[in-house]
Length: 489
Image (cartoon, rainbow, N blue to C red; front, top):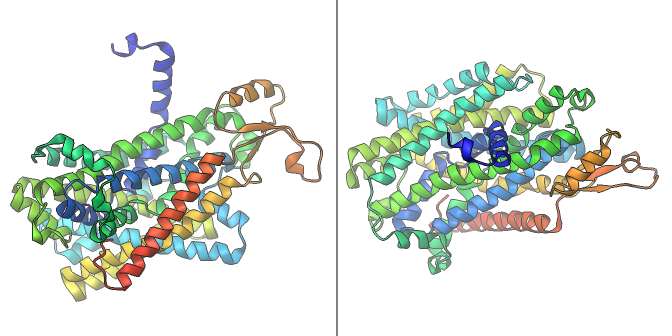
């Protein structure tokens, strides 16, 4: 009924957009895992809503990097890991592979810890048993996720499955927001603007901790891989067999998909990742601001404080959110591990072997720490995992900016001569790239009409600025942490 009064072009655009919903939601999972909760609560407990600006900026950085991932995966037909193997020297490829695996293990640790604590709160399962139970998400992936299949039904089914956990997490935080009294709403919205608190030593450390906990390295490999299924599906339906065989999308597929892939990603990140991370800080700011025991709270302490200062129901809702986000993030982390291992080194093991190995690498250290150090060890391993991620992010994001800035990798040939004018015209009306006709040269890549998708000046500027800012701040945090400063990761 509502769609009938909407102009046809807008209705068609909306219905087409719905076909692309999925990858952005799955990428958003990487930005709302339990590793974000401690920093968000510490920020709200110390500065009320003043650090919402840090949440907003961290998601701006995430959008910039993830848009580059969408472009790289769409134009080259390869994810970030595969591009590294294909174009970088072996020694550099292996170095980046080691960094990527370390990042995935560190990310998995936070997800394992969050899920295990949630299981203890909700069902009374001891921590060490809860850690062991988190291996079950691998079983889900074994049966549900088959990237080697070109079936969109399989892809969409898995996206819907993960989306259920994501939306359950969002609903939990909506319920939390209804249980608090914000008071002056304008005072809350002022938190999204820069404030002098960001220049204070502790405020700066907390803001940078929020940034470090939000932008996750493994999401770059994930984002550059997930967009490819719709491009392949388009080429299969339109019988562009040459492009499918070479694993490189046709120009018409890129032209059809790229704009909507961007839109779906940006909308998902802002409506899911930004909302959840903001909600964590808002709940803490409204209820725990000024409470001395909230400054260094671990995940279990946060549950206990929410139960005390709001209600037992609020504590249980937080535990449910931790369970849903930890489980979905664990599934996404295992997927990322498979993408990394296949992309960098082309493991010859069967998929189920790769996935179990990836999961065990995270679970075994957790079981050891829980068995020997208990709850204190859990907090230490969580903090250590965030330090590791902060160190690795600049290294894994640099190749992404490099590949999308080099014409050699970001050119697409126009091989449909009969439809050439139509394709060129549609591209010239877009912001995807510029068509170039090259004179005969010794380089075969420059002997045909091509469309150049390399980053423009402004996108290159903001991409490099994002990389330099994240890198500088993360190194600054590590140095401060080593000097004994009160740093939150």
